[in-house]
Amino acid sequence: MEVINTIAALKLLLQPRKLAKQKIALVPTMGALHKGHVSLIKIAQQNADIVVCSIFVNPTQFTDPKDLEKYPRPLEHDIEMLQAAGCDYVFMPSVQEMYPAPEEWHIDLGNAEFLLEGEFRKGHYQGVTQIVKKLFDAVDPDLAFFGQKDFQQVLMIRNMVAYFGLDLQIISCPIIREDDGLAMSSRNIHLSAADRQNALVLSRALQYVQDNFSAGNINDLLEKAHRMINETEGVQLDYFTIADTETLLPEQQKGVKKLVALVAAKVGETRLIDNMILN
Ligand code: PAF
Image 1 (cartoon, protein in one colour):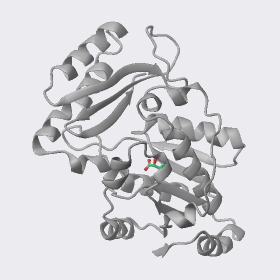
Image 2 (image 1 turned 60 degrees about the vertical axis):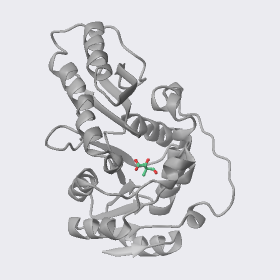
Image 3 (image 1 turned 135 degrees about the horizontal axis):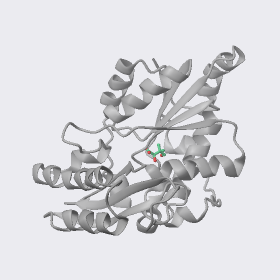
Image 4 (image 1 turned 60 degrees about the horizontal axis):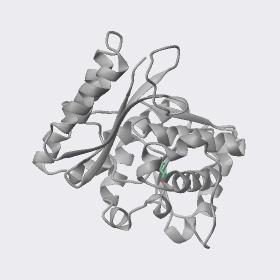
C-alpha cells in the first residue's frame, strides 16, 4: 500500500492503471476509521481493480470550528487499518494541497440541501460536495463508495454528480452497527460510558419504526419514536422524521414512495445521526 500526499503524484501513479483500463474505486473518508469504513473498502474491492482511500479532514464542511478542532485524527492507526484491509493507495493531502487559494463554491444541490442536516449545519453540503468534487478530479474514479449512515450526504453527492454530469457511479453501502445496534461513527469515541448507553435509543427507535412500519400509521410511529427518545436522559433530539428517500420531504402517508426514517440527536456533547430504510 502506498501513501500519497499530492494530486500530481497520485495522477502519475494512476495513469498507467487507467491506460490499462483498470477500474478505479475511491473511498473518501475523513479518517478516524472504523469497521464501517473497512466495509466500504471491502465492497470497493469487489467492484474495482484498484482501491484508493482518501483521508482528509475537510475544513469547509465544518460549521462549528470547535468540531473541526476536536475531530479525531489517529493517522497511524488509520494507515494500519487500511493496510490490513488491503487498500491499494491512501491519498492524504494537506489543506494547502486541496485549497491552494481562496475559492468560492456554490452549486444548486436542490431543495433537500436545506432540510434535516442542512438546517442544523448551514452550508455543510456545499463544503462536502466541494471537497468530493476535488477528490473526484484528483482520482478520476469509475466508482465512489459512501456509507448510508450519512443518507443525506449520499443524495447531495449524487445531485452534485448530476449537476456536473460526471461519468462515475456513486454506491451507497449498508450501515455497520455495533452488536447492540449503535451505528458506527468516528464521533462515537467522544461518548462517555453513560452517553454510549443512552445513544442506543436512536437505533432502537429506528428499529421500532422499521419493525412496525407495515402495520402502523406514520403519525403513531413518529409519536412513539419521539417519546422513546425524549424520555431518554442526556439525549436531545434534533429531528426524527419519516421522509421520501429522493426529496427528504416528510411523508404522512404510506404509498408507492420509498421511505426512510432519519434521526439526529445530541447525546451528551456529541451529535449523532442514523437512519433506516422502511420499504
Ligand atoms: O463522510 C465523510 O467522511 C465526509 O463527509 C467526506 C465524504 C469524506 C467528505 O469530506
